[in-house]
Length: 243
Image (cartoon, rainbow, N blue to C red; front, side):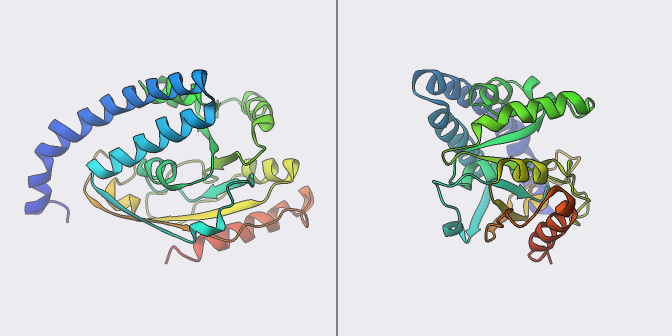
């Protein structure tokens, strides 16, 4: 269905302008994030190097973004932010429009991406080796000291992108993290990014994306034994805006 007249018109721009600019901007903003992180602090490096990078690429695509309920995000509160995962463009959406300072939990392979890898390391994002459970747990445990004073952490609990828009099973890591730190979970629903860039493809195309912020969920009433109930509750909240 994409291969209509406008799709063909967009291809020269995508391959000759947009994709080269994404690589160039990733390198430049990654370098900027390093400079600001070491000269000021990692929050400034993440905010300017990361947020501007994401918004510029969204503008160039273009991806038109709308955010609902942004007032539910308290800048002074640390959260475990949990979102569904539809596309690589989820990263641009969340980095560009989540107003809180946060750290990503990302697979170690991201560290090899030019610009993105060294910039992410400089601002303190969390790399995990998903093939080594012990190493992954150690990396996440080491990151716990960073989640305080309004700094949050972002998880995609499905672990990988959904190819059909339906929620995949949620892994426990984000919820265990929230229970151990005692910080609320902030559910986020992402819509539309799969139409900008479908999972497993390079078929970028202009479109609209929406980020819906839900009311934070306190974890004080839950224990490790009740984790399945917490996971189910968060999953239902995120799914409520997917249809």
